[in-house]
Length: 409
Image 1 (cartoon, one colour):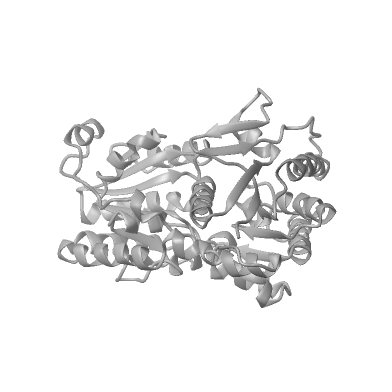
Image 2 (cartoon, rainbow, N blue to C red):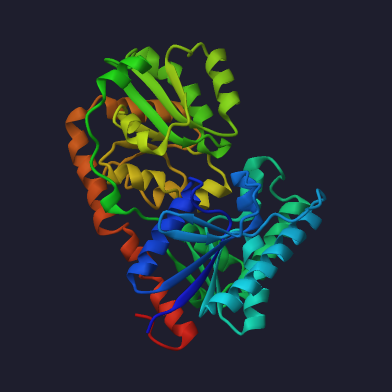
């Protein structure tokens, strides 16, 4: 028997982020199981996308996303969040009447979970909550609160309340699951839907484009690279700090930073202060269709995430995508990376927050090209056999069947 699932999302395609890519992959796998999926985004999507038309529906490729218009929200903390949740709750009531789902599936943050609980209870439907990161930890990285503050503790309590009220909790990795269990949530109520990749979307890396190489001044260089959003927790400042040491030992090293984000200006200022302007290339954001050309210029991808709660608990997507492309990668040994990378086998780890360790590991990898094919092949095999979306989405099946009391495939 089929099942109809109403997914409640913070934001979605056409915005590009790890959040939206994970969503699209999981929706594809649920559709392959024969399930019907309905999708609604919170008012925060409209804010992120800068939409002003107030449209209640948007078609993106094969997906229909129902939108929740941004209400006239207060600027006062707590009051604003309450208004956002009420707007989403009203939208859910309407969509439940129109689409008659079998189950509500809320995704982070908790601002989606609590409206989903209230709407589901009124409709007599089960509700699950999928946690990709904790809202309070994201706020710490964004600088809007500090760990242990009143706001932090209040938000943490809100998350725990939502977990207690839903029928089941999904999360993306063992680090987050351990934290959830530590809050007193029963183990049988928590399942992991691991981050993964769609193998068919990734091919082993191609050859560098000589024209792009010349344009960026990277001919004959040993290129380290990062492609993504420039958030503080990514640790790109540490990578810049370590670069002078690397250059002393290997003057051919260059750094390619593709993307942008909150730390963009600070990283460029740091680059100037360190005298690295001719050693680091900032491309800015590039069209998604062109990203592969930039990947092909990079010898070693570096993921230098800083050690903090967010990075210790949460597994990122980008290392898995790098493995799917048969790339070499060096990453800090935070918990989120250690769940994905076997040091010396599928990638290489350095001591988080330690620029000397980062420099040593990168130069060791660059100096051992004969070992590259083995590590690249191991990484590709890992995502093919273990970290694929088919395997991850299969973890939904027993939970949905239990909550609905019937087979769902």
